[in-house]
Image (cartoon, rainbow, N blue to C red; front, side):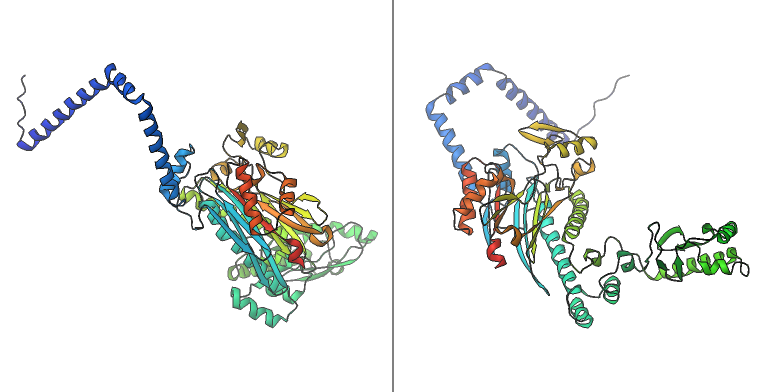
Length: 521
């Protein structure tokens, strides 16, 4: 059976002719490229000193023009990524921390300098803040070394410091020696309504436990052999309990009245057993204990359900959980939980934004002569005393460390040597904030190590917090010696950063210097 040729209109014939022309041109170009004479002529034309010199000069001119432009725009970051043989996250959102590739900052007896090394962009961040409180100034210092883009380091820089500052100010107001009325007004003025846990803390005094702050007050003695009388309290009852030795008659009645017959249940507390009150044992013949138990459980359950409907349970730690028994601020607990909470929220946001990078964190808080230092990653802090003794404020988290290596391998990961030891062959630090692909595998964590130092007892002169770009070329003693032989000001940290780059540091270098001796005086 024969098929007739389809009839084409003028437009279809025109398109067909264009396609045929393009196909013929393609065949012609391919035939030329496959000819050996073409490559021989091109090699002879390029293989002259004049042409090679011209190509080199043109390449250097293009590189110089691009590097003269702003280092924060996407084109420059993309070009620098090519010259450094990496394109990792070079198209991330531009940084809100717009201070360029090199910047300096001064605080109260504190000096910061940051300079860009051979990296696509300067992802380091550093900050100093003085928090005015009711009981005196609290100083906060931090250095962060971002990697794989600026999203994570910008988030931590903008969120974590603000959260810490707010929590410190709240606790200082709560624990101040002013009257409750004045403290209430101060709290409302800055932070809004006073939480119920704070009101209970004020009413109960400084010895309240965490369970009492949550609304359930229980004071009982649980140690064996204790003969003192304890009092158990809940929302609906109050009984006196005495841990005295039972006589033989009491032991005989234990078959009818046992501990299992009285239980305490509440919407806020798990089911637990209570000792038998003596009063109930005396009245056992008149009122069966089983009936009283049923009524007691029922009434407690109903009231707890009603209370649960009107009052929501708090999520996470409350502000009074960071106050010690003597009214002191528990900085170690505050820093740890705020860092972990920030990292948890950061991972959620990073997954939505597709930001696979992360950041290290080195943060120090100075309050009343005590310096608290929390570290996550391979940024490092050192101190120098008045007599020249040098010591570490933190310890690096490197995959090659035995403790970190065992933790990584226990999580099913590995470390490999690619220039330096890396987690999964990727990250050169074993702890960081962000880095959600590695966090999902549980091979990288954000748990901080926290140390405290008494400035007066150790007679500390100054402290240096810096990113790993400095420590790649300088030891702790070398940094302390450099600062001791300098003016200990902004020029000193700038010269130290330049010295690190001159000695071959490939990374960004950010240095924060605190003159602790002058600050305490």
